[in-house]
Amino acid sequence: MARKLTAFEKQCTTINNRLSGYPKGDKERKIYGSVYQPGIITRMYRRRRVWYCSECGSQIGVLTQEECPVCHKKWTAACCDEKGREVGYHMTLEAKGDIQLTRIYRVERTTHYGKQATRFVWEVERIMYSPTGERKVFARNIQAMSWYYDAFSCGSPIKMKRECNHSQYSASKSQLRYNLNVWSYDIQSLTEQWKYKDIPALMEDFKGDTSAVRVIAYPWAETMRKTGQEKLFRYLVNEMESLPAGCHHALNICARNKYTINDPSLWLDHLWLLKYLRLDTHNAHYVCPKDLRTQHNELLERKRHEDERRAAIRREREQKQKLERMEKEKTAYRKRWAKVLPLTLSGQNLNIRPLQSVEEFAEEGNAMHHCVFAMEYYKKSTSLILSAKDNDGNRLATIEYNTKNKEIVQCRAACNKVPERDTEIRQLITSHRADFQRLLKAA
Image 1 (tube, one colour):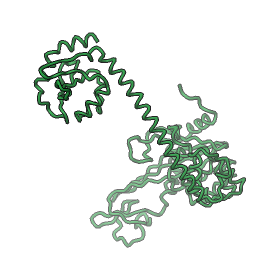
Image 2 (image 1 turned 90 degrees about the horizontal axis):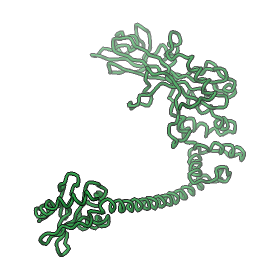
Image 3 (image 1 turned 180 degrees about the horizontal axis):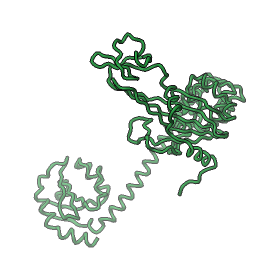
Image 4 (image 1 turned 180 degrees about the vertical axis):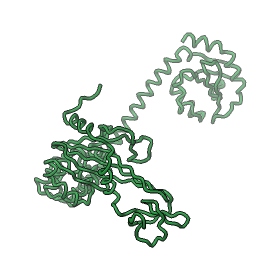
């Protein structure tokens, strides 16, 4: 049954359906020019000691020229390859009522010696933010078998995506799933909430790093800026997953106690340890330590002891489960072969009988140095395991008899060697094949 969409999701879906994914004309040229600056080409191509312009494909002649004599574009690097492909991303900010829309375009540029450069601009992601900070991601499908993170499928539609498909991942980590490294940006319009957050100045301050836009969309990020936690804010712009999920209230505690975080990475590790050890993250004694490094080291020691305690509990639980499984196997074995276990075959100084219990499997494996117990032959429903001994009780061989095919599968002496009385053992079992089948039929 499909999940019912919320009002915000319905509004985002409506906006998404009205947008087109492939810009054309002036819009395409503007996006292309923002990623690959007009008047500049990134490389020249050489073939047989002749240099070509990668933008228009014309022959340059000598490398000392600063620009192409045909298209008059400057070059920034030289390349000996005959063909090249470059990919960049451009982001635009648009206001759709009270919803802030972030559109991300993929710009591909393919060059080949002697040919004019080809370009392809298409939209891959749309991220919409509500006035309360909630966000929804719309994107094209990503090729599942590709090694690359941004291997978008060009023909797939842009539709709503789930940012976190597994509950074991924290919400902060899922925010980076659709966080591409955008090269350039363009602010077309902003909602009242984003104007209040001073997005243009923020983007200029971070030199176009669009991760700042992702961070500032959340209320806890705004708290950092207002309370002067600039170092922590700048650290989380590129390390947003470092903030433990559900610990955003710690920033308010730092603000109330006028605690400045001078070492963001150490403080975030310290906060993660508090959560791991189930300590009170609402307590200023833990969240705002006077000596951060000393308390961090103390928590590390407590974590080591806690890991040892949890490992001991885990080993004890696994051992208990193993014993319970073994008891079930013992009961199942005795029930499965109850009618056959009393069978005894006797010959000249030779006695053959089935192994009576799982404990005897262990004794047989240890005495004969083979894998009848380790490989759990007692679990096989069609294999009856027998032990051959002489009149003095010395073990001669271990035999696997297939009750379905009515044949001996293997007969092993100590260390998986061939028994000295192998022929005699096989003849004795074969001669009593009818007894096996009669008992098995009764069972």
